Image (cartoon, rainbow, N blue to C red; front, top):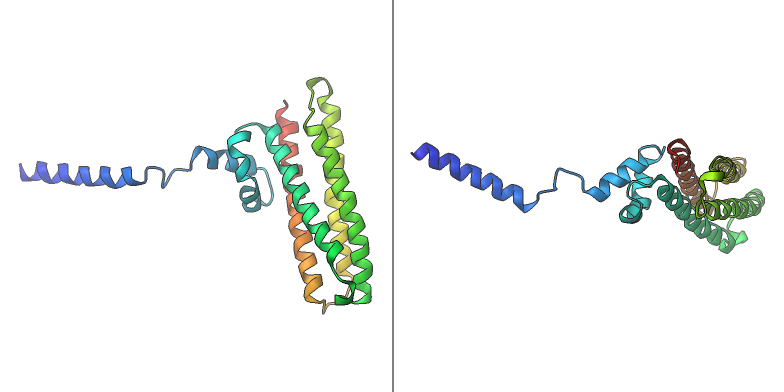
Length: 194
């Protein structure tokens, strides 16, 4: 009898503890949507961090995840470009100034490519899907190349770069990662279809 009561108490205690936090070891539906979407990206942690707000809307829709990825890349690209436009030239060396000027132009081009991509992602049609995917892949690849070229410009500058240049490199690198993630999400959409 004591053994039966003891096991009943143990069971009740375990049940009570599990009921306090029933999802502690299981990912929520929202988290699983994000994990599934981001599984195809190269920078999965960044993807999950930046795209989790879209989970309740995007769910398992590759087209919505691709659109979310491009939207996040646009927002970040704008922020980085704004930062570059505010950067005072007096805080960096002569070679870095040339790299900064080139980078500003490249990030504007990148932003244009991202905007074109988002416009197409908002109007996907089954009858034009293959052509739209081809255009999108071109524009998102261009956005990625622009950011990579920007970073290359700063690689050729002084090894003892200022903190301003180090910050620029860091911000453009993150922006490049977001563009990479958006291209991976597009590739998933192209593979799965509408």
